[in-house]
Image (tube, rainbow, N blue to C red; front, side, top):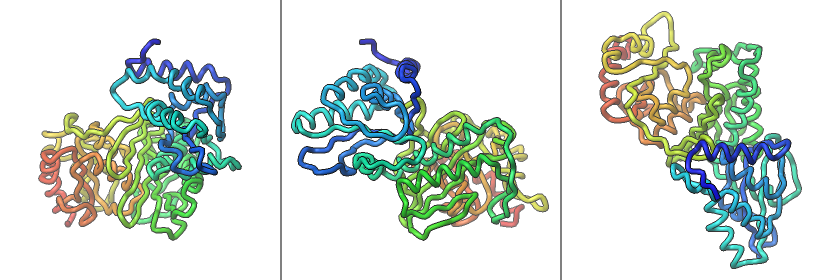
Length: 411
């Protein structure tokens, strides 16, 4: 059998599978589990691996075997079905730049378990884009098996899909009341529709959790609170400039448990489970690795017109330009880019604790190993603003460059 040794070959194989299924719609989530013969019903622990957006190759391979096309459904697989799925996806293992968790779960965990317990039930679950109610206990167990980071990925990608679909259309604009944290008070139909999709997804998997969205505000009183910016970079997006992010973060008294910054145009998903940080692109996850190599520093330049502020002064500072290439992207997508090594640093003024705009990006940078402090080098949120830098040297350079502008701003 031909091996798929490059990402292009994997994507080509995925396309062949997808085009062979008439009416195929990639699922929002999918997974294969095993219910032991001694268990009377399905339970979350029967699904050791769940996939929230991405990993589309294993999704379409299982769909090919069971005959799935779209929507939410569960299918019982025979041993022969599972072996067929393993055979179909095995050529992907030749690509060594990222892991193949679904193949390894099917082949190295489920198949041996089925050998030991021949009466066990193998079930594949697909979750469609639209919320659907089903009586199948396997679907309920699968949804309950979702870890927090998988919920965050599912929610952010639901919002990103809406944003992507509406990109380039004639959008209505709405004015929002100032909150003290916002510079731009404009929203579009895409902001509102994206937040609705995110809220519905979170409610499906975590109905008891509290929710705080930029457009609809806060609801619920749980200590588990989802912070949502459904479209960061609204003006870029409305001007058909493809620099925007959909931000989702789960905050508890113990800190940020999961966070996602989704690029709706490139379809990249930057995510963290609170410990490690990854980017999901083309079906697999790659660890985020900060580096100052680009020497590009993104600076938040929205600010007051009647007095100096750090971003506006810093971006015009020739001392900065002597060492770095200043950029003004006007979206917190740039914060995720620091974690990914595409920016050497990000600098912003303001108070960011509990921000729907910044919490996800900050969590990504911290999990990736960036240096993240306030503008004076203290613990983040102890004072104003943030410097998120790829390494210590870049961070020290920026502290020195920022200091005069803090003084000018009266800090």
